[in-house]
Image (cartoon, rainbow over all chains, first blue to last red; front, top):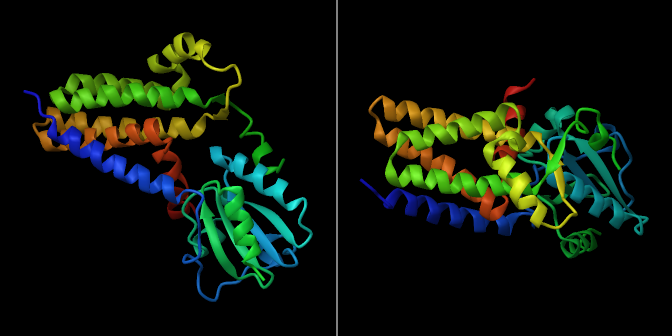
Length: 137
Length: 148
């Protein structure tokens, strides 16, 4: 006895989710920061950028992390006031929990005071990164 | 290149990133068949594929072998590579669903079968169509919840 209804339901729901997820990947969202939380050199192990810092959380177990790292580290070469800091999520689980990081790569965009102004899950697009950085005073 | 990505355990095995996606397409077809026909043996067969993928690695499943012998030679030589562990973990998740579905069916709970196969199918379809890796997305959430 054949029934196509479960298959139809699964495909429709999965497709809807797939499109939604695809849209959100790499998008820089500014509503996920933990209020009052600041990141500083002590926590990150390196000094912040003089204007902005991109803190990328990666894991060894993560395919898009390499692409994100390549993109961001290459972009900051030309920027003297922006730094790219790379953090291993698995060895910083406390920080991961504090910041409510759910997946890798997640890149936090923080200002010179260590306040998060936006974050991107997945690999962001170059234009999005430039726009987000330009908005940090 | 950052030291994290150069850690010795990371450099272990890299596979052609297109292989798991191809396997996900075949998996989608097999699971769709299981869902429509409500046939537990189709699920068992797929479960065995998942088991091989989870233990030995996705490149050793029948789908992986087909990819290597039939599909890969026809693709661009320049292969995007990826760490084998996320796809391996994803296969383990698939095996979990297949096991639950099989037990459900054999224990006379057809709804359990449908739901389990439905989830496994959704995961395979998302991977094949959108390159979404459910196992990868779950991994960090799992370790931050359960690891000290």
